[in-house]
Image (spheres, rainbow, N blue to C red):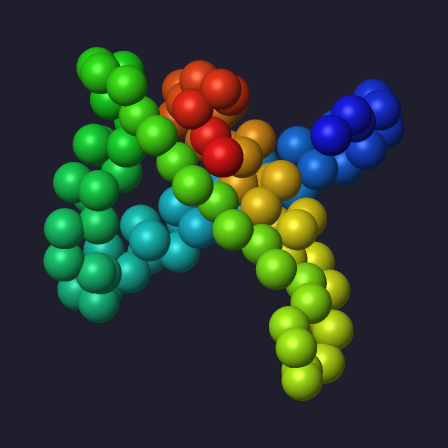
Length: 95
């Protein structure tokens, strides 16, 4: 999966925007009392540099007897970039 510079920058900016929106929404929910219980702990554990972290990402655009889904594979690529650059995953540990 080779990315040229333009595609990488587009995907990275989208991933960062998604992360920023997600964290903003979570912080707003936390202030309103509607937060998901334990979500802060989840992010803390995911961001810890200790030990080896593994991830299996699945994106399927085509299902039998169903309409075509667009963007599933792209979502997986963005999640992979997020895991590597935000949470310190080794690219070899992401399938």
